[in-house]
Image (cartoon, rainbow, N blue to C red; front, side):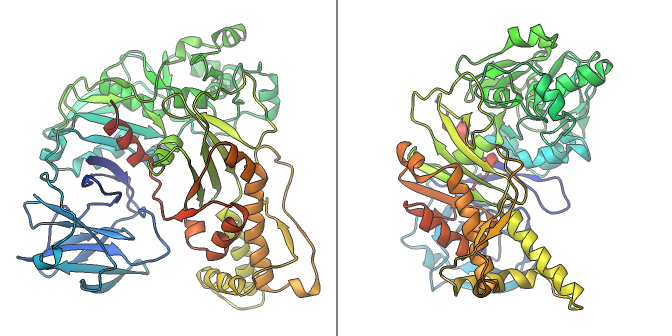
Length: 562
């Protein structure tokens, strides 16, 4: 299985990486070491030796082998071994083998290990039977992380930088391109004039031409007063500021001249697909259409009659296709990717993230990072209502194969813990003691682990929630014996999980047939107290360390396409 996905080293715009996953394994890895492999007669690989980081980290680590430069591959439980420079065989081994030789280095404050293996040590472990990179199918996924850079520079420049790092032979094998990106946002262009194809050395590429800037989901121009004036959609999903249709309404009201030059629109990932395929009218997946608002996911159609009644420029709405469909084929060679390669309709990054780690329909996926999300696949045949419920804490988003994901998307997660740590650091500074915030976090966790229970109750909604923005944080049950750091940290972690449970409770998961929870996210994996509280509240087996990566999901969607 050959997969491509984007990474983001610090200070750069990302790198498009090709990796080979041997059949039958569940590992994912970053094969940056497909550049130089170590000394003669040995196999070299490496892993991140940082136990609190079970997912692929968003930066690249480099180290030096004795005879050549080798990239370290951050990966928690497995390592990929490539046989010398021919890369004709690949092995996956558990890193817990006591016989492995390694040396430690320090990079970015984290301890890294560089492993070396003799061929005699590979006996009995799985070997990829086909030559590495010798497969006929390659799905290249454009990660949503790329899209965040478009405020700073052209998104296509970011893509070009990624593709320029890949060898010609890799790109010439590509026959399908999968794309995912942040939903809700919008950009405009002139159909047929959206880009200009140019030559960069020997690599053809396209550059934006008659296009607007990108308006992301974070856009806050649409006030609650403007949204209240809009006709209600015939959809189970509400319309909010930052949604594509709401943004168009704002321009109609405040700057109608802005829209006049353009006759095509889409998310930025839809733009990339349209340019690659040479489409006059973009083809948008159900994922992105639902994220714009005024789209009925049951009939899979725009609320054209409602929009036309208010004078909405419906000619800007893209054609909508199923998430697994190909939008078209590359209209010409792109870098070294051949003309005629299939291009999938751009997908939502959220759905692709879940797809990347959910092997069974009975799995729920929990991610607690800066914020928090708990996703549950709805039973086949489930259909949402035709009207939104703005007070519901759970939203249902279209997934794949006509199914939906019920999602509790919280605004409060690891950001609350980070705020608490920041408060402690500021208090110390006010007392004349300068202590790094990095010192507080592990000590907080250790203190809370010694405190199994507390009567202190914290409602941690510092940032409100989408369905109850006015409900902010509070503390109750304050007694003289509950003012220690251990009590407060335990109560804060418990409050975060209870807030999640209040939005998507155990009963709802049981109704959906959930049998286990796949958990990930930096706040969760670094915090044993938070993990304890999750296991107390949800009576399901919890599997930690599942990698969540939208780009990997987009690649897998096309790889698994029938």
